Image (tube, rainbow, N blue to C red; front, side, top):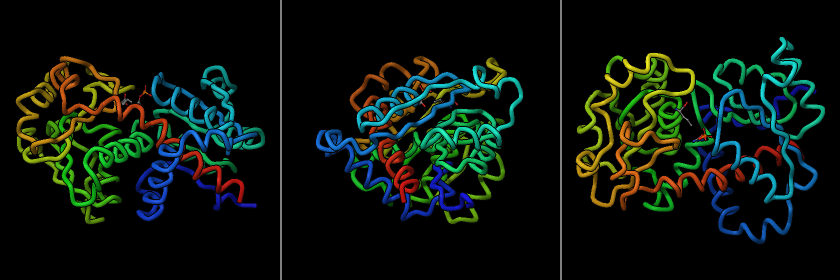
Length: 309
Ligand code: CP
Ligand code: NVA
């Protein structure tokens, strides 16, 4: 049997808007009825394998706790401790893991490796971050925005900083959830052309620019992320280029009254964001971190439901 029906969660641009909206509703429901649902143990007998080729605090713990709270179990692995580290192919690894577990979550820098794993797995594969995208994070972010500010459609989010994996998923989300996204990055660290073309050709309301003040003006939400992502080199150069994109009190005051601040974390205080903003009244970063748990319960339920069908 082919695996065309397997419900992978790889990227926000690979899923239709109505499916993402349904997934979001599922996450909200799993959060609001979390005590009743935990008692039902809907994931009883299900095992999630998690492969981490890079460090993680939130993704690792929230997926683990999500499975446990819903009655399932997890196996935590690193590429280095598997035969993957000695040259077994991704394809063979995918086929073998599919015989044991009900779903696979992987964090790996090489996005092609994620896609290859999904192409050969007969169980759902979830993207736990690659160098190119971080879709689980942005499901939690949209959820957090809507809890604080109401429906995100028609609203404005501003991104200031590096054009990294988290921004890529925000760009996908802007198109899928129909909100405006103002992006400010240094010209030297701009989003890759394929992503800009994707946004343009799919009618996304994304404005690409280089001025943080301009991007933040009147926005309902200001977002940033680290200046040096996992796998990045040129620490000094990045710091010099990105310093003007710091989110501080003066920048936040340009946003709409009542605007919120989000950051996927881990934050580098004093670099991309000041303590004043991180700990200030507009910051929702810890609600955002909590929502990784609830958003991922939705993602897991959506993936595993496909497997049971
Ligand atoms: N935001 C996020 O994915 O954090 P971790 O790297 O700790 O998983
Ligand atoms: N952009 C960051 C996100 C960490 C969760 C990185 O890739 O390191």
